[in-house]
Image 1 (spheres, rainbow, N blue to C red):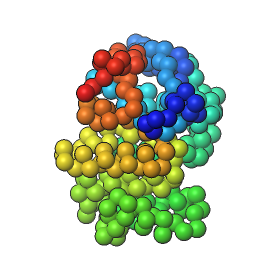
Image 2: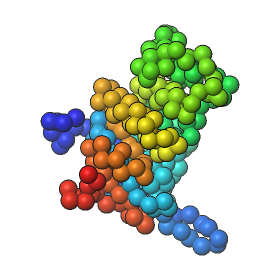
Image 3: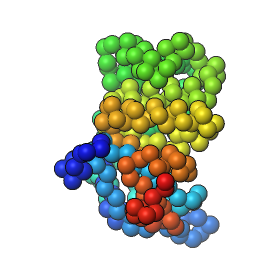
Length: 238
């Protein structure tokens, strides 16, 4: 997205005055404290911070997997806070995908069948051909009939990425996508995510502990004790 005037690009996701409080041990624990964030379509943003700072909680709220205590979340132009679980799932089905560090592949399905699943849910007629194409794009054309247990961690994550992009998502949430991979394999997965982000125009929202991965994003924000801060040019990870 270099050379693009970010001010003239549509907003893909925004949160306003977002708070999240939970009860633990009979006491109220505030995880998020008035978070504000706007993400443009096609952007790549990294959310960094120490463990327990609220990163994954924020991602879950932005994706409509949970509801905030107060504040608003607008995902793909629709406010989520007054929707029930089924309605939020319908918004996600229109253009949201996920990649997690634990892959979340279905063990009883082959690589090809895992990638075909979201296509079949959308009643795509050429689901098998499209899934084959996506597996080829992530370098697994020869592994399509293998089950997850027969694949390495890096291969499983490639299948997960192919499956995520099978839904032609407008926005992809990735929670520590390289967290369970060695450095070399993680680098390959990073390259793949950013290539698909660039070629498909998919908005990429990354939660990561990896400073090198964060540095590849257009923007970096960091969570600290439930608050979100935009990194200045001087603070950005080099």
